[in-house]
Length: 393
Image 1 (cartoon, rainbow, N blue to C red):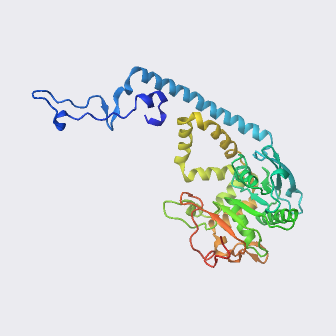
Image 2 (tube, helix red, strand yellow):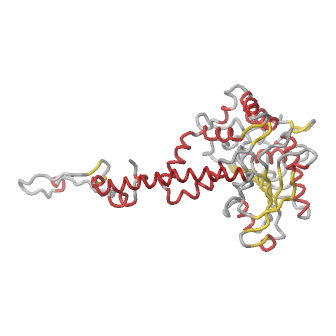
Image 3 (cartoon, rainbow, N blue to C red):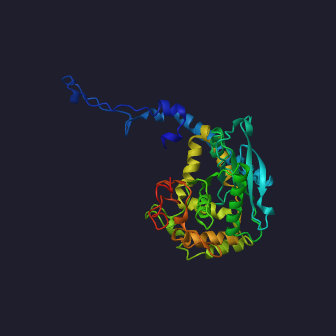
């Protein structure tokens, strides 16, 4: 029985710290012939024993039942939201109005990506809050099992903050099903075309590129391939050095090699009839920290009054699984996570063009964290040693 699970009435009344009563002999106040008075009814650690009062027991039981009912009802609502999202075609979970600029499914080399332009911020139209002197911002969303939207499903998000500061914002999304024969090279060429389109719409200004998680290495590849990029890039929790980290802290650095190559990726793609189900990727995230799954539900149960809405919003995104093509997923696992070829400068984008991180010329801002067990801080490697302050921010 922990303090977090107790109702307010008990936390305020039954678990108030009670100072341990010391024998009066220690304070020199013991009268002659009087028996020493010691602490009675005090729990170890100094908690008052009136926690066992009948009213408190009943209050605890009532609170437990109320929390249990609300907990299971929240899980029911989560399932309803998942079903409704799937029936709607899994649209982007954006809390902003937008218009479709480019649909890459209609390109000569089709992929399931699309470029959106955010058209409304709150009650203001785009034209009312833009600063014409500022460059556009293009947010690229990662394909890591989930659908697009976490960067803009709240007002206090990357989209909302950028628009609040007067930047025109574009958002790169994707659809639940990959295009037939979609490859990683096709995706990279599509992202480059999106960048060119955004730049053309703003008098040649290079967009600021935001790459979240898996989208970060895609932007790094574009900046380091044979053509390169001009605009600054912001990489948020992006895996670039795949074998970095510390023993016992970053399990992802060796988990790709322990199964013995990419046969599991082949198997999962076979089970999906040539498609890789993003639910497997989400499962891998949870396997990296199994206790985090319990903590998520325990936190919901303990703070039902303030966590229920946040839990449902997040789970609507977390449980919206998207597919990747076999070719694309194999290229990601084999070249990046298992082969570590991006850091070594051996990743081949297209015939005759290899990615060399030392070729990056545009400014880069990288956000990394000691607490990230998937993308730890980048160590000094061959790919980054040659950077100079003029090349990197």
